[in-house]
Length: 270
Image (cartoon, rainbow, N blue to C red):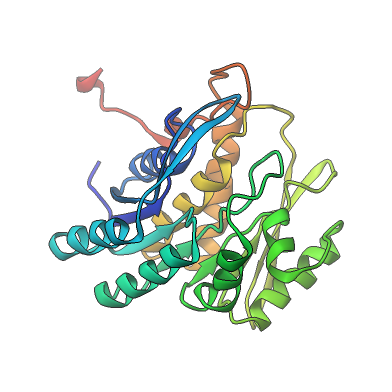
């Protein structure tokens, strides 16, 4: 397989390999792109939960971004967990220096169990500054609720919240509907001129660790290769759904998905 694009990931590490930087790298590799990283935090975790988090300083994060990009300039960037307002400021400053046009932001702010990962100051910085600097923001429902300060309990609420994010300065929004208590998962793509609704049957499984990270990385990969944002979202949702269906069922808790679902080796390597 010929490498299709060069991508930079700015996100936290997951020692269990199911989410974060590890899921991002696996997704991008499986879809044919070359992944580089700027790690924002180190975690000790497994499928049952997080044991500890070590935050990387904003200075070191900026060094990773700038020094890596100086040698191999990325075609697109995926941003995940940014743990403080200081880190957000540093990332924005570094992005301005390296001048990459295609940026996808997955605002990792709330754990699957509902625990907030960042403080109010950082949320405000995302709300008032960062969402205006990226091409697409991909919040789930709890994250969108934090950003727009409303309760989301229906698809209509999702559309309202996505439009509100556009009014706040976001260029494009993919609001993920997996938290709604419905048999169908509804994801909504919105910008100033259109609304696209993606509907898929909800897959009953506990193996969903890293789906948000993987989705945003898949979108970044497709977008970097010339697909439109809307098409990139459609293809990425399809990739993640197939990865969920074929999950390896590892671990005692919320297990990982199968990032290699799209990957086929030539027989000479088997």
